[in-house]
Image 1: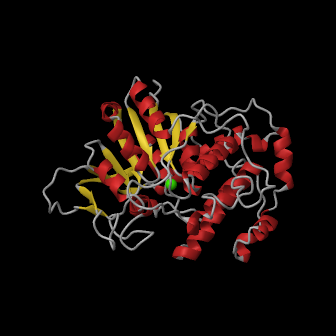
Image 2: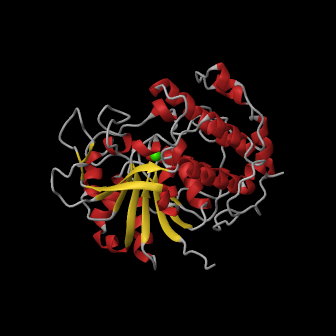
Image 3: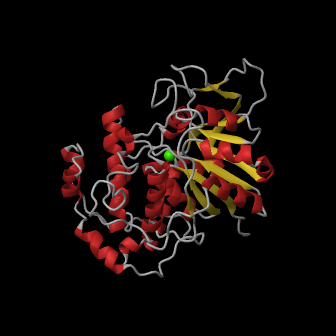
Length: 389
Ligand SMILES: [Ca+2]
């Protein structure tokens, strides 16, 4: 069997609980070569989200991937963050992952791995233009960085294979009745991207709301190091365990008490969620906590029993396009209305008779997604310095 060529990918994101799992999946999916990460405003400030990205890279044992700070605000409008879902740090719920609440908190990070000085827009354009093969761009936040990049460096469009993004909805939105958050917070940037002429793949709420973090998934995550998963054990080279950080592991264990920590953070958890299960490793606990925080947010805000894991669906699309159903449509962005601002207008009945500009995903093989996701979490756990002895 001949080995499949790796897909060069640039990831633009706003970590973010679900972005964290998109980063993990991009780094550990066989067949993806992650060129770099740029950060955009969204779930929190671009500055906080960049720090969050570094912490995710460290926790997942991901090396050799640079993080670049990006645009701090939408093209036209005022910034709008999402503390109701992600907390006030963009990634609350795990001590060491947030660190903005308590100055004495021990932070998960490699002190040698800092946010790269090159701006995210420039880094993205440079990497795309320099790539010997066409690059796939993945957007899991507002589309501001990418809109500016294609305006500043239109020549880079020639070397883009496609743009796969989480955002939009065919029907109802999530941060308003009419629009999805990533598009709503910078509709003008989305309008630039949607009319860029590039091949676009939209992973809307209709798809991501099927990918639920059920109690069964949480249980598998808690026991991730004991799970028997049948996918191949291939790794793509970003993980590595040679680095020893034992002292950090000890420090981590000292603060590794989920009930106490949540009391400190005054997070309103119900008794069921507060009951701490057994974990197969510190990394398993970290992943579990990220998602139980998300579970609480979604339960409080939307009445979801299980939260949807939006962003990694984009990465899964790259490696498993056959696991999605799609529709080729003309999609436009509402930028002129206050009530429907950021709505993705999907011309399902071809009423406009306009050239289709977006491949809209309409369904996903959820079981296959989770099998793949959990397998990559397992690979990350093997490389995580959190699990170092
Ligand atoms: Ca995101």
